[in-house]
Amino acid sequence: MTAHLLAFTAPGPPVAWGRGLISTRGKFARVITPKRTRIFETTIGELALAALDGKKLCGPLEVTVTFVHHRPASRPAKVPAVPWKLGTMVAKVTRPDIDNLVKGVLDGMRTIFHDDAQVVALHAYDRYAAKDMEPAVHVTIDAAPWA
Image 1: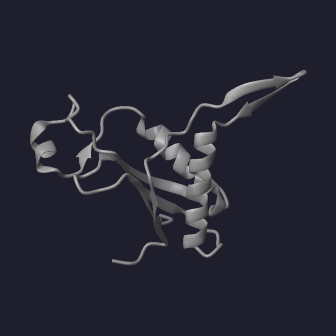
Image 2: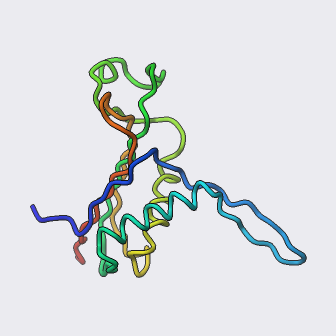
């Protein structure tokens, strides 16, 4: 198994991409990205750039993202009892939607891509933390085959 082109962890709870607010000034309208989304994207971008020493990735890429959310004190109704009692990571099937979580990460990593169209394979996992884990976002990037 070869090493990843990039691997990093962003500590703290995952943040879903927030819908922009539309502001008008005179005849012009602009979209304002929510502050929480901007901070999360900036953090992801800085961590990715630091892990690559300021370089950019070229060619087709395969991205794997694991979102680890805070584990609630009581078991959510949609989660089966057995895995919850074992204290392991469990699939999270509630909001925010995984596509909004992924968008925040990919938008934040614009600092290391020439174009986010380079991402040709994407694997995303949305989980509640195990009993001894803290919330975080784990990202790995590998070269994807051309054919």
